[in-house]
Image (cartoon, rainbow, N blue to C red; front, side, top):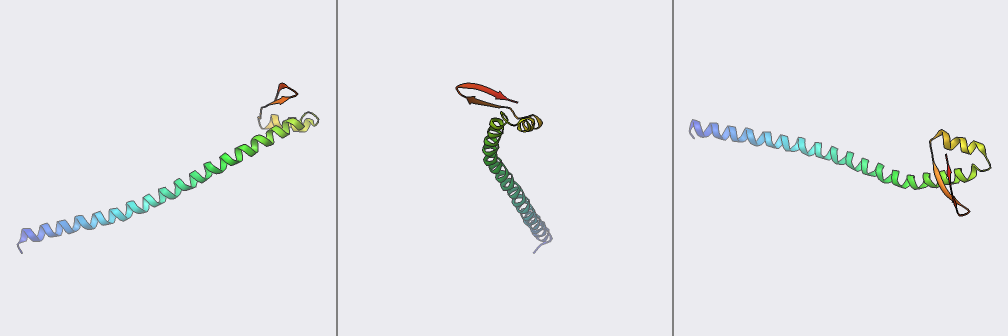
Length: 94
């Protein structure tokens, strides 16, 4: 084996080792990013489900605010505006 062959072999081995280490680092980084993505998707899916429940809750509070002024204060406090169809008329609650 000549000196040139020895050096080429060593350089090639070093490049392969560096690429292997890079592969492991990128794989770990990709796994971490995938985990964050799954967590974000779960958060978005859960918030979509909760949004429907909160909308219904706001409607019920608005209906109850006809007789109970404290419920109207709740709507004002949290900045909720609800428009309901009451007896064929559209009525807006703050």
